[in-house]
Length: 217
Ligand SMILES: Nc1nc2c(c(=O)[nH]1)N[C@H]1C(S)=C(S)[C@@H](COP(=O)(O)O)O[C@H]1N2
Ligand SMILES: [Mo]
Image (cartoon, rainbow, N blue to C red; front, side, top):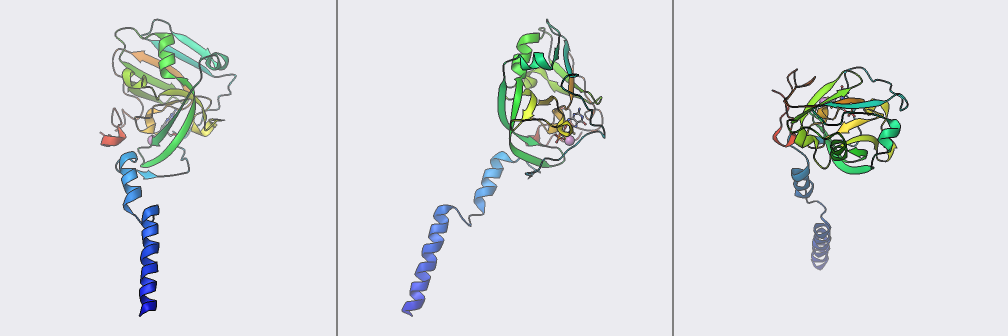
């Protein structure tokens, strides 16, 4: 009996140690995800590729970005002009409407706030359309495009963004589903009125907030 009692004591001690270490507490990761993983999403550690079946091959030397429309100073940047801008870096989570999320993506590039300070939107500017080299378009409100975590990204985790993920330069707009983050960025149109893009005119939600599951419709 004393042996059994000693065994039980040991078992209890081990379980208490586990509890202190947070092991076997199934609630812990879920609680964490409840604050970080939007509804209906699951976490991945790979990085799926989604496109329209075309992955434009745009060498850095041929890449140009035009920003025009309702702005004081329209610009066209080549690669050297982009590199001459103040560098910006931000870490954010990706949420794709196809229900995968990917945490802690570190992006390097030029902030949209800096870009907007260069082109200077006119007082009536309120919307943005992003255009890709593949003909893709997507729309976003100007004030959300100007959020402090948005950028024109040329690198991910310190390495150039590969062609399949939208290199040489893609937009990153963390607050929305990833379809708003145009790849192979070619043109940024600043507009007074909203102009729904490729998926927004094909059944996707006009805004795409993952936290309220603005997926379709
Ligand atoms: N130019 C362009 N940008 C695009 C797309 C596209 O087809 N063309 N697809 C969008 C969609 S629907 C998603 S989910 C993400 C996919 O980005 P990824 O391939 O890097 O995961 O890119 C978005 N940006
Ligand atoms: Mo998507």
